[in-house]
Length: 133
Image (cartoon, rainbow, N blue to C red; front, side, top):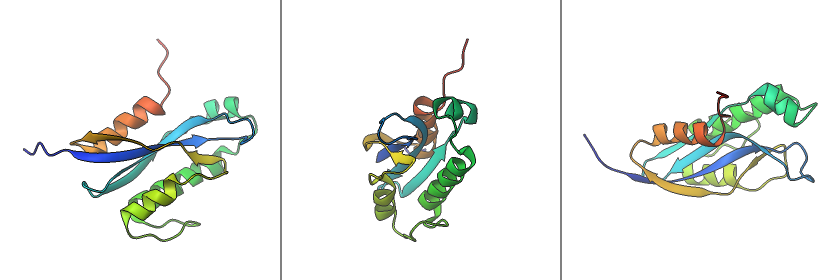
């Protein structure tokens, strides 16, 4: 059993319905590790919560955009996105600031031995709303 750990970086993906208001709802995470040869995204779009946050938001379009970003992260290409074969430039494109309804948050980092489990932990911590007791 290996105890190897890898440095990683991640960004949250934010639903920003009005750029002027600067309000957002975390809806996904993209995580990158050069050492671990890892770039994947995951998302959780609670449509009811999104509509309460941003009445009139087209949740189907948001879901399709999140799916495209996760496909780009994993495979290097998705409809409507540039084709990038190397992980570093791909993460750079995903994490670059933009003025659209989906925006990346700031880049954060960490170290982990199980990158896929860490991505899921980040999603559960930063995106999935806590269950009411």
